[in-house]
Image (cartoon, rainbow, N blue to C red; front, side, top):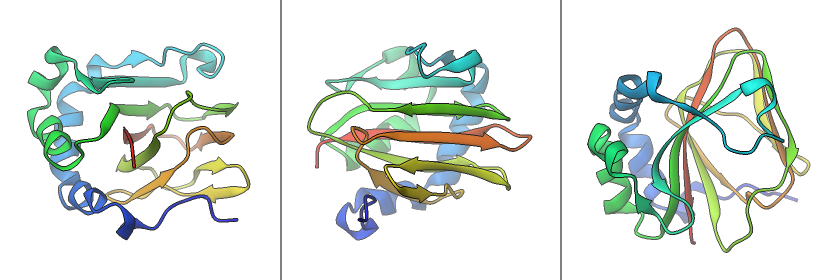
Length: 165
């Protein structure tokens, strides 16, 4: 069973991929402003940090964040009108996120690779293993059981966009 979704199904993915280097530049400007992921049961040893741009579940802008990442926030606003939560997500080197299910709701989750190290790194959604790549995106159902790992010596950064299909 294929759990990921075809890139052509969601044209906004092409826009995110087209501008991923500009998005990465904005991430680099706020990388010191990250906060620990809010769910302690999946944020083992403070291994997972985020920087929220649009708050879940209504896609409400975090004005202090939008001001610091105007290109990324405008790109989301322009191309993904059904966005919900949007954030940068950093999984620290040598860390794993245990199996879990996301929040309830009628949404899908997009990951755009922003800073992906080489090595043993990925996400498993149900029985499917997906691999991040710089400048590439994929979509999955966050309500399916998933786990992620970063068995490299560098942090992994993605842009997470939750959206209603």
